[in-house]
Length: 492
Image (cartoon, rainbow, N blue to C red; front, side, top):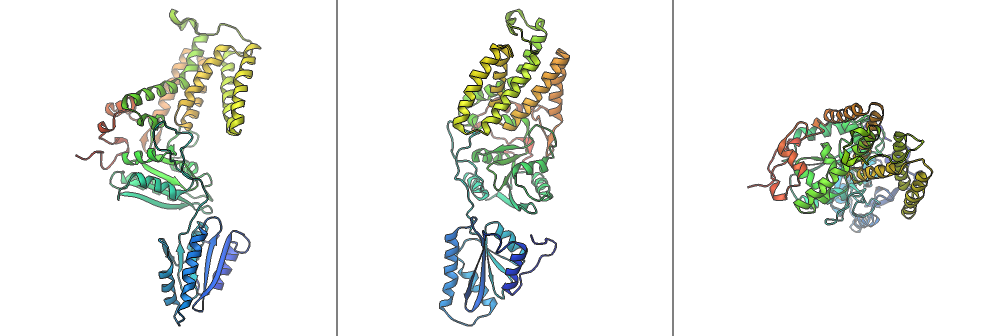
């Protein structure tokens, strides 16, 4: 790749340009990098492109317009020919660049570069046609009612899906290229009159300071640079593949980060409670949405504390009230209960990983085999007691009910830690583990945002909106956690 420290201007001789492309970009070696040479009014013109990233019909149409200039034979200078070419390029996006570095970057991004002999500038024409799929409903964020279009791997299409929902002249989509080799397009999207400018400035500064060869993992790599997560398992940004969810957060004052080649959009800043919301709650009435939300809260609570509580009652059955003293193992096993819980929990994780790597028709059969054969036989031979299978299964369902995949895995890690503390210290272990879990979450800050807001620090009105899904007419104030410039959603 061209040396970034020496911005080489475009030479007047196109032979020098061609040699530069051969030496630095691989022209003639890489089969997908193409060059089309032709003459217009006795002057040579070069057109550079990358096969597979460009629309061939648009290129042909541009070539036809330029070749038609030969119908009017006349003696003109390079400057005049450059102006004629500029006027004949029938495309809505044409830019002039003055250095070979810019030419290379744009060509490798899917645009075409047109260079005229003796003219000191190159014409960059947007003929991009990236390979990819059409918008479809995301698998992880399905709703009963609602739109079926979701983000795809094309950054242009993703910004268009947002523009379609927010047709506001104050919507901004700023583009930044990141990665010395990948040159990944990163778009920062926000509402100028709503979003806190300090937040936008911080995010732009952090992204511009990313120094790395490439961002092949796109959004996840950006997250690790942006929030500096380290080994903290809890997600500090929210991912969504739904355009309506992204647009809703924009209107609240959040900032979106869209990475090219990724169908997931980053929403920031976020708290723990952003990861337990789902679009289905807002596609139903306020009462039904609240019911769904509380059902989900119960599932998340079960995924965290059901197994540690049950283990505590197994270790100290005297803690159980008389009315529920039937809870606990009715049979004895040669394997300690804590070990059974860990084996079952890891077994479910094995199944989840196997399902990811297995074709869908086979994964269904695999689930049946695991549930019926392995589970039944493990109980019959005495490896597990049936209650272990029951409570681990309920806890796993609670994990799957967590909307955020990242949060569900983090909660599982927290559950295993609390299980170990309960097995060692019993009641004090449960109390210490739960307290440490809450304190750990309370000290986390994502882009200077308290992770447990509005629970810690406590804000009653905002916390009530977490507990109860309010109707749209009743939601007039934007959340203060993002420090919006305009707090009122509905103008009087």
